[in-house]
Image (cartoon, rainbow, N blue to C red):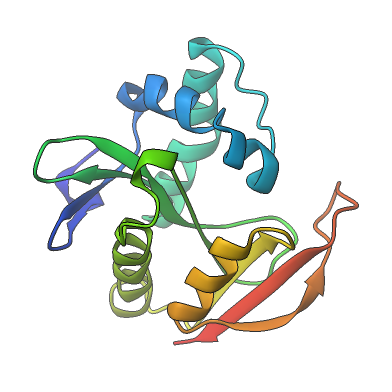
Length: 172
C-alpha cells in the first residue's frame, strides 16, 4: 500500500492493513474478546487470514481510500490492534471500529487511534456521519464511543444476524 494510507499520532502509526499482516490478523481475530464482542470471522488458519485481507480489507481501501488500519506502536514497532472506518452492509454511512490485543487495552491506544481516524474521516474524506455498533455487553467499547463524542441512538439488527446491537452516532 502507498504511504498515503499511513497516518500518525503521538505514539502510533496507523497503516493500511496488507497481506503482510496475515499472522497479526489471524491472532487478533481469534482473541476471546474479539470472538465474544465482534464475532467469529472464521479465520482458522493463516491462509484464512490472507483471504480475509484480500477479499475484505484491501478492496475497501482501493474503492474508498479508507478502511482497516493496523495500529503500530512507534516506540517498538509492536502491532497493538486495528482501527478503521468501514462500509458495513446494513448501516447508512460508515462505521468506526476497533479491536486490540488484551495486553494493550486500557492504555489509551484505542482512543488515540479512533480519534485520529475520526479526524481523517472528517477532514480528508469529508464524511458527515460516523456510526459505531457494539455488543450490548461490551461496556468498555461503549465507554470509549461516548468518550469519542458519539451518542447512543438505539438498537439495530444487521442483515443476516438476529443479534440486537447498540448503535452510536456522531455528526461531524
